[in-house]
Length: 186
Image 1 (tube, one colour):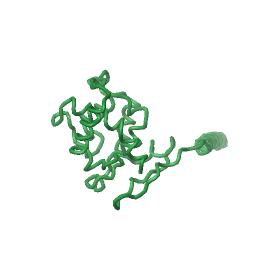
Image 2 (tube, one colour):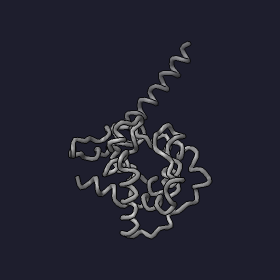
Image 3 (cartoon, rainbow, N blue to C red):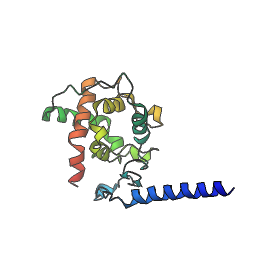
Image 4 (tube, rainbow, N blue to C red):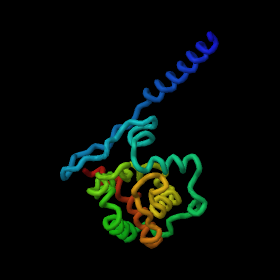
């Protein structure tokens, strides 16, 4: 019995040391919010990896976890955005976003659209999502928009049968190019 107690005590001290190390690391502060138009952002909770990342409760977390553990499905893993990185592409993406995404993800992608506020889990906060390295990973982004969120318990619809491939790529270009800066201007 004594060996189990000493082993358990050692294990707890190791875990406590790791936890203290993670907490002691300087974490970025959450994105400031000005509270426009009576809306509020989804609550940013501090997870193990910082604000708005793992443990934050955003609708995109199960997909991101799946991708980190298993990768993107083979049918998507070699895709690359074929559209030119131009103002015209981003403007096209803005129009697609407004028509298909803003009702849930909100005007600035904070996940605070009028329909999105009624969903559980809430829509992904694309502002933070677009700033994450994975957001630059074209296969992941295309898979997200094309297949939607049903397999991860999310209400996000699959757009592969309703949007053209170019519209999907345009909205990806828009989220990567515009949403982080749009939210920062608030």
